[in-house]
Image 1 (cartoon, rainbow, N blue to C red):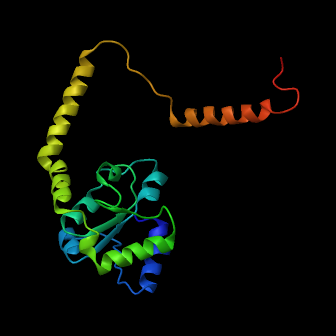
Image 2: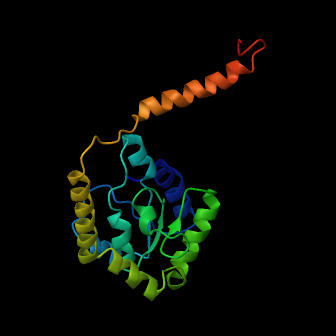
Image 3: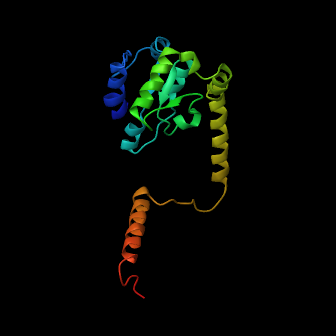
Length: 186
């Protein structure tokens, strides 16, 4: 699920800089073992999910990597933005310059302890993402949905994505047409 940026630009640049980079191309039997043997974990699935018109689910692989002590560099899309605090819990890639990403990843590989989240911050994050905490949030969400269901009346509707895009296109076209001599007609 990695982005073309990671696979075709960042990984070759990291290898050229002398780092050992292992790209996972299939199923991993023991993800925890892989993370325990790793120093830095790269995760950028933003383009993958955007291209499919869906969002990142729960962002578990980066969270698991953090729990195993990896320094995580990632896009901050969808669920990853829920706990990805740039520079504190994980580090954003693919939003500036390739050399900027390479230099930061090299520094993290050389001195991971200075790039990892603080113990207190990580423990708080893992508590927030624990099964017990998630179950409590789900119970609250279901209670909210039950309360919604108990209220009579019709549901609110949002326009479909294609309708929103069409309306935006028409609005842009209208602004162009309104700049033409003699427009708008009165």
